[in-house]
Image (cartoon, rainbow, N blue to C red; front, side, top):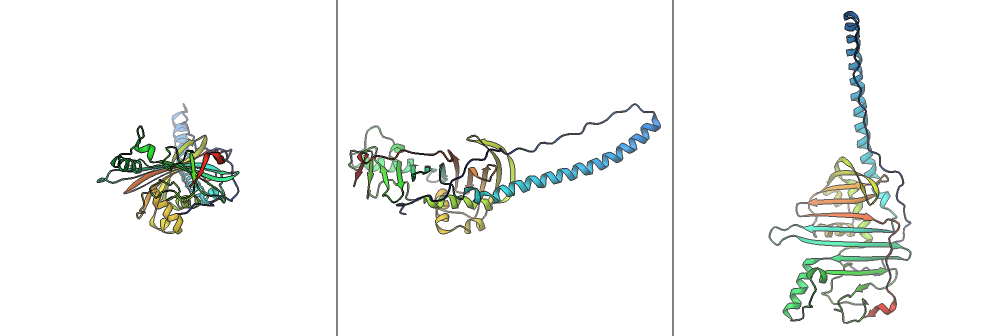
Length: 310
């Protein structure tokens, strides 16, 4: 996948100022009386009648409130696409784990810094298993660097700027440069965080979670200072199948490369339906995505004297 020239060209959004307010209920207190027996009996009959009506009203109110809560969850999900459409400044952290009882679990951590002025993206991938493999290969050739771990070697950072070649960080000098960044063709064994995750497809792929079924509102929580409603559901095979090719590949990469029939999902949605956090899991993988610094993300662009052209 070539990521050169990638850009975010849609308008930005701001965080809502009104937090999601959880529903609260009030209770009725019983009324006591010292009336004589006949009056008390009549009062009791009236009380029973009123109580029966009151219970019906309470049940009706409860049913209405439950329907309102259900509608609120559904409405938030329905707004997810529009809430994410046009976002062009944010930080997105992704962590996924492929579960394999034979080979062991494989984890990938990704961080995306997306800014709009100038338009660009900085991506960092941490793949310890890949780093361990590289370390083993270097050890076989007798050139393993001292003091570096598999996580060090499995960590890579790339910067994509509009209409420019990809910049790849070279903190250990493996590209033969004496600068912290290189530009141009890199060796095949180099870890490139732009390889498997299309930054232009991530947000549309997240939109697939707006179609989850068996929706249930399970609480509220603050994520990076933003009040959210927590919703659980299931992303079915139909929802997965409705994705475009690029979005489907991106979602597949998030879950270890293979999309199964369905996956459980848990979403933290703000008052506009924006997904501040998403957790997902199927039989073979689990992961989490979390947004932060919406509208305030930035990163430093290397100067030319920090870059070596390969």
